Image 1 (cartoon, helix red, strand yellow):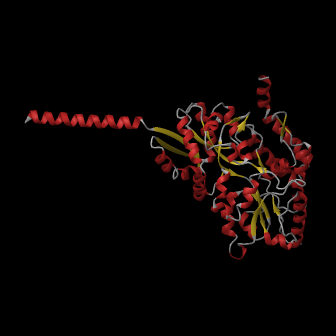
Image 2 (tube, one colour; image 1 turned 60 degrees about the horizontal axis):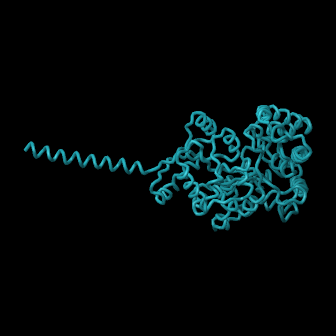
Length: 428
């Protein structure tokens, strides 16, 4: 009996050992990609991953979500501690910062070998946000830009059967809309001074480089930016736009109440405007590309959105590139759009009826052919959010003249870029 039990025990031990070895062998053949993504994108992309894993049975993807507010600090800490993931979503204005830290893999070699990811498949301005010194560090994942939301019915009452195509038409239309309401507390356009984008957009339209001397000094008091800045500040001086954010507590209600009839914003606002502009207002609003400087229509807007990057420390670059190719497929980008409303970076995806037949998307598609990147310096976000907004507010309220505001802006920007000038001087 004991001999029989010992025999059975030995058989069981062999079976268990073979099972363990088999499992270890299977796990050893599976590559796990660590993918860090932000906010809602991280939640939604997990719904796309199963299809990728089905198509690539030797690869597993582990998605980690980060809130946008903490993402930059977490990523910098990860770079400093050599604890970066394989793949990461980066806002395309963050590309310069992390490339300067030598943390990103140049993707030129991968692009050259790829059958699907090619520069010509993307909107040129969006693609260029990822290029620094001829090296591509990111592949556009989804795109953003800003254009004009407007009230068609108010335009018609003001004598315009088309959106403004030039700065001159924009100013003329705004004055005519303001005249419609006479003594009423209503305006033509909303240009909140706590939003830096319109001031930068119009500066770019006028031909400003924003920064000079290879991105080491401010150029905001230069002729081109000064003309654009003065143009927008004048809307506040003539009371064509409300000053500050205190006068507009709810953008969507203000738009539906005709408190203002034009607003420069992005695609994230379309669902909200649809909620507010319903019933008899449903067909009284639309979107349109931005007016341009002189005869340059459409005017340029900002190239924005998020890109996919591979960190240098990744040990699974080949598998990670396959995931990037998967997420860059037209059909996958359309599915991503359906889940989250993030606009596709691939031009081909815009032929899908879900976008092609959407009346509000036509303007975005057109605008994406006229977008440019902001200066590719790591300090750009600090300049935009803390300084441009500050001096736009002071000029709009008449606390500073345009000249004073822009001179002080340049002085502040020069201080922010002081370290950059020092580094460049040492590398000469």
